[in-house]
Amino acid sequence: MSAVAPRVLGCCSELYELPIVDYLLGQSFHPGGPRLTRQLASTALVGPKSEVLDVACGNGNSARIIAADFGASVTGCDFSDINLQRAAVASRSAKLEASTSFVRGNAEQLPFGGKSFDVVLCECSLCLFENLNAALAEIFRVLKAGGRVSISDFYLNAPVPRVLDGLLGQALCVAGADSIDTLRCAFSAVGFEYVRLRKANWALTEMIARVRRNLAVLDTASPADLTLPASWGDPAQTLAELERFIHSEGGGYLVITAQKPPE
Ligand SMILES: C[S@@+](CC[C@H](N)C(=O)[O-])C[C@H]1O[C@@H](n2cnc3c(N)ncnc32)[C@H](O)[C@@H]1O
Image (cartoon, rainbow, N blue to C red; front, side):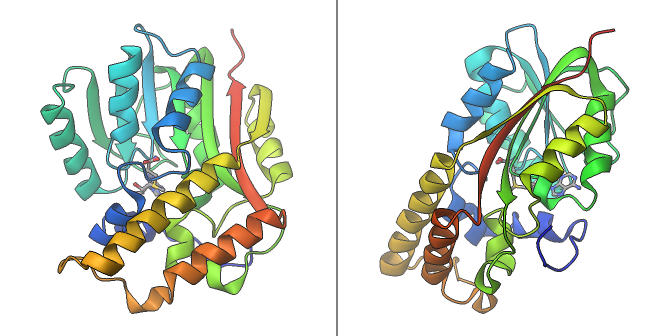
């Protein structure tokens, strides 16, 4: 575990409601963007008959991609009322309200019955949950027997540098991540089988480039309603530090897939 302040339920949800975070990250609040979302869904064999749960769905962008591209029914669950409202509005505009729905809930106490879903996705959010084991146990519970889980998240080999320890580090999914071993053990401990962890650092390179692009436009155009919080320090320096941290193997991005055993 990193030496960061304890994760606080709701605190990071408010972070992802900030217009500046929405602006800097763009539509996808996770490294790898829509490309990685499609990979997660393909690996989990999502198809037109699949009932999919997206845990910590944010603004619902991934739910819409999976509904539109794979024909699945997707339920998004998140702690943030504001992002759930944004998700519902965007789904109506995209005419996807029949195949997407959004429900408020805590990943550690999912508001669904057992064995409800064929596939559970969770992108860049495990590292934000207060209790990793509780969230994985809930994902396991709501999956049908033989159901698949497909997750992407940051992992750490070393404590995060101070500059990545703050709110911007949290927005970039860095602070609070676990080691590869901790993640592997946690998946196996709740009962998952065929647990596979694959590195996907290209997704972080993609995200850093995306945030840098958006930051550059912000510098020159400076829209009046977007102000960088003073507590973030210099975001350009944070991004450079993140890049150095990844290159030095201090941490990286992972795709984790696993299956709930068939009955
Ligand atoms: C990095 S964003 C990822 C959003 C989305 N998965 C995506 O990739 O665009 C993290 C999301 O996790 C949600 N979140 C954090 N803790 C949560 C919890 N305990 N239960 C449900 N959602 C949570 C936040 O509200 C936020 O929308």
